Amino acid sequence: MGAGHAHRLYRRGDSPVHALPPHCKLAAVLCFVLVVVATPREAMWAFALYAALLATVAYAARVPAGFLLKRLLIEVPFVAFAVLLPFVAHGEQTQVLGLSLSVDGLWGAWNVLAKGTLGVAASVLLAATTELRELLLGLQRLKLPPLLVQIASFMIRYGDVIADEMRRMRIARESRGFEARGVRHWGVLAKSAGALFIRSYERGERVHLAMVSRGYAGSMPVIDEVTASRAQWSYALTLPLSALAVCLLGWFL
Image 1 (spheres, rainbow, N blue to C red):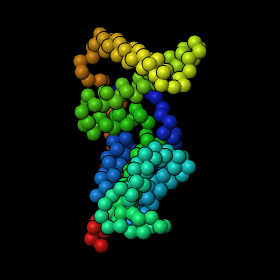
Image 2: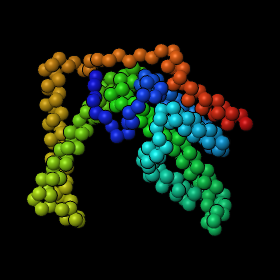
Image 3: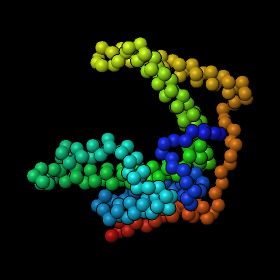
Image 4: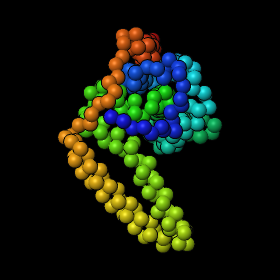
């Protein structure tokens, strides 16, 4: 299995975090996110410690703060949703800067912001230290259904091809004087989208026939078998185990 496409989230490096096997990092991030979600929202100090743990991982991985913060902008829609919660939720009201806000809504907004931000930050760190091809190998090593791994592999492999097809179609429209300026141009854009879908579908059929002619029988050959030592597992699980200790303190204190 291979997918030699470098993604924009990946940052090349030779840190200990980069060197960890991909399935170790995937398991560590998944466990960390589960622990964060299970933490009571009232334990604000716990979320501060989680952020400190992620900052430590980022430092070990030599991922700059600016690189991480810029990519956290992907959660802006969730932030907008969280900001609205105190205004639309019912229940006890409190005054904040002259505004009447719901107490439950404020807690809900904090819950979404804290846990969502930590989850996105952990995912960004995973993507920044692991190539796409390695992520696929890690998913396969963790026994994810092979069909899902293959779908993800082809999505990564041909995403750039479809994007390039869209670019060529846009250039062709603009070279003929077309500019989408209003509703009356939506029909042209809809026809372009339909043509792109048909081209992609036909490309998929051709690729499938080419694979079958080369012996494809429902599973992709594994070229590189990734393994992990006990020391590497211990190193990777330091993050979720530390977070688990914080979570348990949050429940019992």
